[in-house]
Image (cartoon, rainbow, N blue to C red):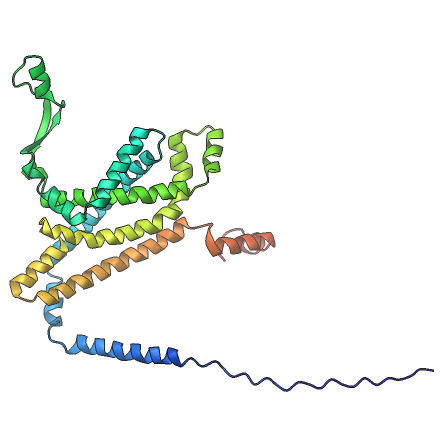
Length: 325
């Protein structure tokens, strides 16, 4: 004989009445930003001090374009000097030789301590120290006097200091040598970020120190080196305006400032300089983005996603082993 037991049905809960969280502060901030933006745009359109027609007409004239080319050339040459010399100084800082370490430390200490404007003006006046810059046997006259030979000279060739130490060369050397001190620290940090086991494995394979640096260490260190190097390049672009005080006439800011002083339209030319530097910086930012993505392959979220798909056997099967997530 079976006994039927009735189980009472559970009461269905009432539907949840969800009330969205209100953020009045956000809307207030949006309103304030909108008002400030409208005020700024209104100032740009209505304020006659900008003199937009004059500015646009002048900022594309041949002298300004020549100054733009000079700025780009100064940027490229200074960064080449800074990056190349910075790698050498970084290797010296990591050397086991105490003399090399000491010399590299003194170099970075000096050029990081002195402002670039001071360096640019200092290099622009180096002609005061030497009338000519000559190459040959060091201390030739002193050696000749030691052996009783008067007016002994063992110099191969030379240049007039005024001819070789032009304003452009002085500015390029000042910016490049200063940048090398900063790049040395960036490269040193990038090299030290690579696991020492990579170097030990390469040494076990019989690679030389130069081959290990070129093929093993630097390619992996580039992931750490590229982002701050991009920032240094943008900072160098802005610092090229300092050579206008050397002075360097073949430079963007110098030419824009000259037009403003000649026409008594200083403020529009300053705005034109701002626009030119914004455009150049935007181009550099795009290049930095692609370089970071190029040297960042195998790291970050994309690499983690690929590893997860490979673990499930999905990446190689569905993508043919190539491509992106």
